[in-house]
Amino acid sequence: MTRTLAFVFSALFPLAALAADATAPADDSFVRPVADSDLSDFLWTHRPIVVFADTPADPRFQQQIDMLLEGEDAMRDRDVIVLTDTDPAARSSIRSKLRPRGFQMVFVDKDGVVKLRKPSPWSVREIGRSIDKTPLREREIRERREGG
Image (cartoon, rainbow, N blue to C red; front, top):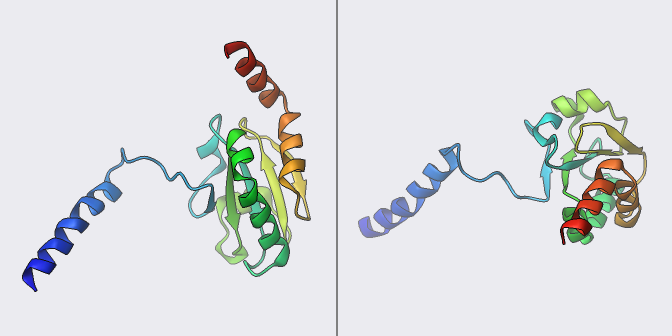
């Protein structure tokens, strides 16, 4: 029994140290809850798509998340990160800033400017087209072509 406990503790201590280490890599999840995030956390690194709903059971919310997950590769190629907020009572800083009503999908570009708000789910193809029309994305595509 003590050997088992020693093994369990030896396995857990490095994980606890990694969790407490400020230099540990950031969460690489494609879809994540808003939690304590702020839009400024993603300036110049990611394009947040924030999906709001009054409850995670909202069928529009589920449909939007499913579509984004199906097109994850296309969205990651565009530096998209998906943030979800399904608890209006929590009053997250992002919810306070963007002030959605019920279900809403909001696309914020890398410069922190809201580029799109939709009250119904959008396909990855439609979202991708909207992203590709932004000046920042056009520049990224141009630089990628010239560099490669």
